[in-house]
Length: 354
Image (cartoon, rainbow, N blue to C red):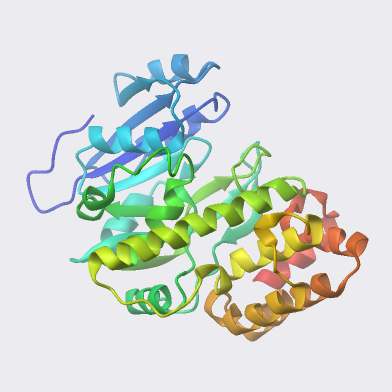
């Protein structure tokens, strides 16, 4: 590991949390070691893997910090990794994802005093590392720190990427970690992203600085239409909403009287999917497709840029809401299971998102 900076250049920690990803973890660590920015430490925490991951990590032991622990879940590994780190800026790199070589350099360039988080877009790749032609999330044009805070206070939600697309300040993390690993056993990034605007500025670099791998075993992204994942995402969203209220009280921040799941296009899409695929499940009790559509109309501008793209997403939402179940399932596969699209249709969808 490299030493601490001796000047004002911030020292950065890249923390790789790994569990049974022997096919990908070496590539993730390699991308962290190839950063153009010099003042970086890389630490990998293996959360009790039962595959060859520990052997692979051992091959990097002369260049990175390696911590082996009993399996306790993603959040427990994140807590352990942060406790071992020293960086003023901290990135949690999923062990199946990658960072572009200039990612940390661009994060540091965007950093300002009072920053709680810098976020960027991620380009989707498949299990073999091939680009899939899409990036996420689609931030609103000129998405400022003030815009993020206003959305967080008014809507309880703002566009943010999964784990790899976020760089947090140590000052922020030190106030909220360790997270309770029993209350939040997985997806700690959802909690951290939700509460970050309460602790400082969230700045956005509107370009893909990392790669998010979709291989079928991801927590949320899927190669097939999976109702269980939709319902799990809704349950996780409710935990994030509760965390937002809790930390707002702690910070003395007054929030508008809103439910974040009513103002997040991401969660509204998943609630619609659950209504169509598992209408009897208690986690969507009381939801009606047409009500979800009207809520989507009210917030699409906050989560999609350009009138054409907004109209396309609302058109899909309305068609899915009105469709009988067989047609709704087909429309949902188009949205949530890109591998099921034909090549021509996949190109049409990508063009609509540009």
